[in-house]
Image (cartoon, rainbow, N blue to C red; front, side, top):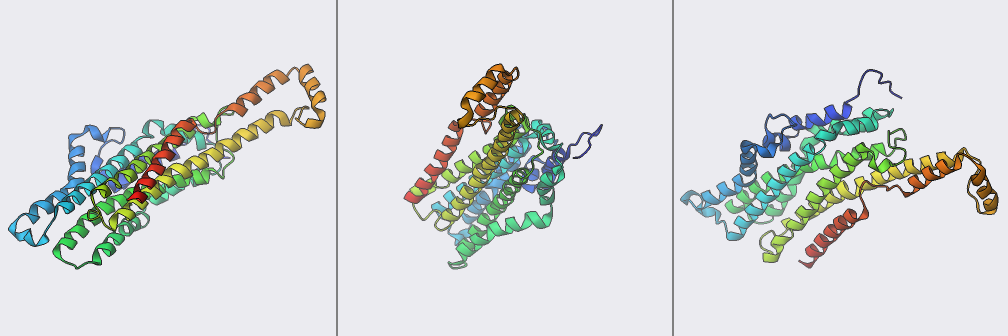
Length: 349
């Protein structure tokens, strides 16, 4: 196990702070700001967010009304598509900045959680390696390729070209943000294999580091679930608006939401459950009264005369009743309902 005498380990904190400089979907909105300063309070950050999200669609629409762009034949449905793309891009850029800012005040809790683990550097390495250009660039290209393929089925006229440009612009942000929604959950998958994490012995699910991870992933998953639901709404106004693009975009957002929300929470569930069962076994394993149906009378007598049994039993009961996730089932049910509702809404269209 690592020896940290006099040397506090901040591997996760340092790695996470690099994201504000190396993730372009965050950096181009926030600019060269202190990560601990909220970007949404900066008028320039908000202006950049709006310009990057809605700017291409606005420019395309304005130019199409001029004589030089008359051949583009931009329709009302195309304008609505530009508005939707701007909303999706703005939501993804804003959510990326907010989601990455969420753990800022709690970075130390994750450092504390994994500081004593012999595999702490391996836990952090997926995020650190993910900053490489050759890792983060391909998802951006992959997000735009299906758009080009979808629109190339029609004639390569001027209208299709400008639609492809606008869709590719929006998908480049979606691809970068999606990549950074895929990478951090890998940390929890690695953590699941570690048995030397520092959890609260009597209530592991409410360990500060576990809470930070669980709430942070849930925060991003809810944004994605709402986004998946939002892209189903234009279908109510007719199929011409999105055509073959809607299933692709919806499937992308829904898959990300399940990856960030369902998978990560299940990993955290298994981590806390394993630790809780280990502590329960430790409490009774070294004593003389292991529960068994055949020796119930003998066990009750040992419990009665044992001086340590009341405290042991109380600790055992506390662990047995401790939750396995930081929040109750109500939030999980709400998230599952939102996902199920979006699936139903999509299928009905």
